[in-house]
Amino acid sequence: LSGIEAQVKKLVEDLKCTSVDTQREATAQLRLLAKHNMDNRIIIANCGAIVLLVDLLHSPDTKTQENAVTALLNLSINDNNKTAIADADAIEPLIHVLETGSPEAKENSAATLFSLSVIEDNKVKIGRSGAIKPLVDLLGNGTPRGKKDAATALFNLSIFHENKARIVQAGAVRHLVDLMDPAAGMVDKAVAVLANLATIPEGRNAIGQEGGIPVLVEVVELGSARGKENAAAALLQLCITSGRFCNMVLQEGAVPPLVALSQTGTPRAKEKVIVLLFFFLLFLSKPFYFTII
Image 1 (cartoon, rainbow, N blue to C red):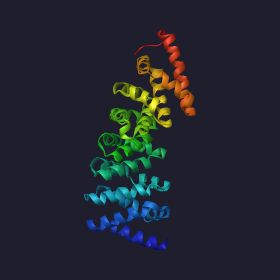
Image 2: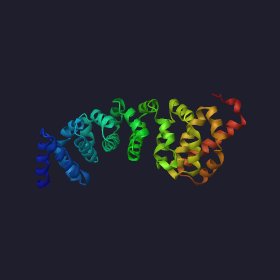
Image 3: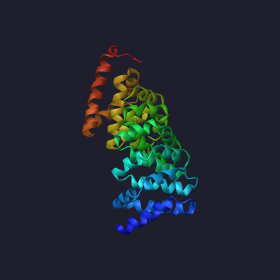
């Protein structure tokens, strides 16, 4: 460990150097050291590298920026480092990378924001700092991995209620509905975010307007166990708040797959489905109790 510490101290000094080549090599070495070893992550943080790596997120050298953001991603695996990175005012520089970086840098910036957002206070900071719009842009236009990293970050951010409206307003629902295509390989991630967004009126309206109801019904029928559970939760939110959406769900033929899910689903899925099927019975037998919106 003492040998590693001496190496890291030398690399930290190199980060301060004005030579682009020296900075690029130092960030590459720190990125590698932080990749697999938890002790290394602690040493690197203790040697003062985090603040310097954050500064290099604004580097005009593409490779240095990529190395710096990836080093921070690797360091953030340690929970104490998550707090240290946020305290080093990293969020706005990470957004800068998300908006201007190479495809790899954007991916790793989104992944770092996800990692930081595991801490509750950071969900608030990230949501209020303007990260959501570039994350939604990456969700719609990024590489396949970038889209997955963006969806994961948006899911975590959507757990904090205040962020849900921001995510909807940034246009995420249309991209999430598009990603419900099984060919995209992101059904479970997309439906998990939609289930969170369905808990607010803006989210439900966007799901209805963007054609989300048919794909949610399809996931109830053909999705994974977790996908079915989240799709059922989203449909329940849609139906209990709007007669119009309830009609749309029924017209999509949701009842047979929901009945099947009530017998084979996870405990949470069964709970949601039973409430939903009971609601359908009330809706169909006494529709005048409900306001059709």
